Length: 447
Ligand code: NDP
Ligand code: HSE
Image (cartoon, rainbow, N blue to C red; front, top):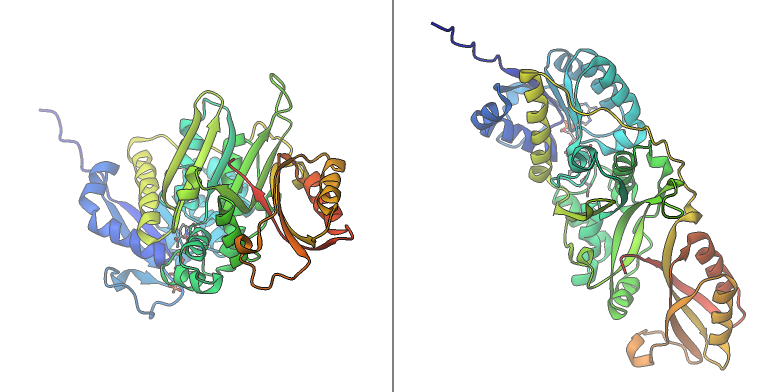
């Protein structure tokens, strides 16, 4: 009679962090234990949860007996380590320690990966263990695995998306309810979308970290957060939001990663990665990405355009992505095999910010007299920038309370040009004698 196969031994899961995301990871690991065991091929046993303060109040789903402030001992005795504490240290040291001890690691820590991912990838490669990080980009949306694995046989040319739930929530609230940036940000914090330090969201660091991770995977090139040209939403005013609506746009914080190809059949010359607020036409699908939702467009040579959409932040959505990674790592433990390694063979140069191709919408206050528009358009021509539209709204249309007599408001929208030419053009327009103020400069994308 054949021997009955032995039941697989439980896999020991250590959880580092029990905040917005960690609490939901613990809940799913406990609540869905039977299903997860069937999917993973072995029971997943949550053996401990490392926190800063073991005495702090916790959600009722947390078994307080599992809490510890000794994260090092916890990782030393685990098969799978899940890091959802955030920050660079001690997260990096703990992950490296876990890898060195032979554990598979799962992290949602985009700040760490975008700053020093290669150190972790190298360590995981040499130890022969998995490192998974689906939750680090766009919360619940499966985007890391599609770019890293599903599109590994194709050539990705562009990644364009809304990668930060907090700023999307804030901009959406400003546009739809007239809320101030500060009030909308406080709501996003209360809802658990924002980073521990929300400056990371507002100033675009969080989206830049995610853009760096996606660009690295998409273009087989190391891109760190320092390579990403970054502007946050702090300078976006209520007036900008109102003007966007009047001119047929909505303002979104976009992340854009482009492969620069200088002609058909020629090898790519570099990679451009940027994060900044941009005017998106109301008819574009990204314009309808509301609240804390994220969306990512990927353009690949053979696949064409792909779009990924879903909840980009929040405890349960992010925990879903974490658990997917835990099950993948567990399957490898049970059945053998290993997830993909870092791929950097293309090693493309990172292009300077000024090389990015974009369009501008510029609002200027000028003296309302004959010949001024001609002077302004002359400056654009001198900088090789062609105009798509010039609009001079009437006093009723522009609804500017403090409209001065003798001052006209112009809204110039350009065609695509290198960022460096557009920026130089704005400086030259500002220097014209009849120009009172350049009130706003926003890039236009997706048109
Ligand atoms: P929180 O601030 O809510 O939770 C952090 C947790 O880590 C807390 O439990 C904290 O302990 C613990 N912790 C922090 N530092 C230490 C330390 N030095 N030693 C031990 N424990 C520590 O963060 P989030 O859950 O929001 O985010 C966690 C990670 O997930 C971050 O990397 C974040 O970028 C990422 N992420 C977050 C998303 C979200 O929507 N919130 C979405 C996608 C990714 P204590 O409770 O005692 O303070
Ligand atoms: N603070 C991040 C955001 C969390 O708002 O998108 C998800 O990564």
